[in-house]
Figure 1 (cartoon, rainbow, N blue to C red):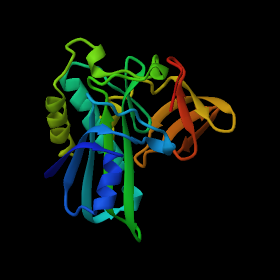
Figure 2 (figure 1 turned 45 degrees about the vertical axis):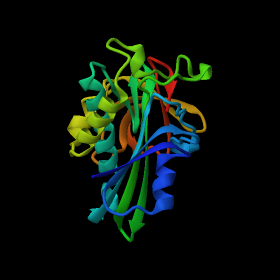
Figure 3 (figure 1 turned 180 degrees about the vertical axis):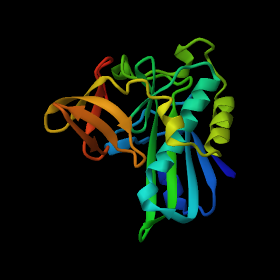
Length: 232
């Protein structure tokens, strides 16, 4: 895999899309001036973190299996953090928490060709030794705040690249979800309490409420884990 290193860019995902990189490659930046998360949210990207985007081209990848890309990315992040002694938890579908606070996010942008995914750009940000804005206190955390820190950012990036080269199952992804069976809050036009039962193969969250079992997609709802009150 080709690795392109930048001192600064708006976002590694945008850099890849503008430069029209071909083949499998990774762009990693020391600083992002316009880091983005899902639903248009900003992602603080000061020096000291790992900010990388992986571009992959596919020959025959069904769009119906798009959640597999998310499974691989989130599981790779969790395995990376676990390798440095942390205990990550996935907040469906794509945020990774440590101690109830967000430590990593993933933004996936796919290019479709009919019913196939021709190309995907997987952007991953991991807070390692970077200073977080005061307004994120209690919401976000960095690896350096935990035993063993500060950590070598290059080692974290190397471990992430290694883990991103592998493929994972839904079962492996669910190993990092410790809140199945617990009450959650689904955020629609109004908050709705439900019990999280499972993650389906297509990535939908299977829930139960008032005797009814149903599945929701991340495009339909946000999620709040009731125990730590953190929103997704």
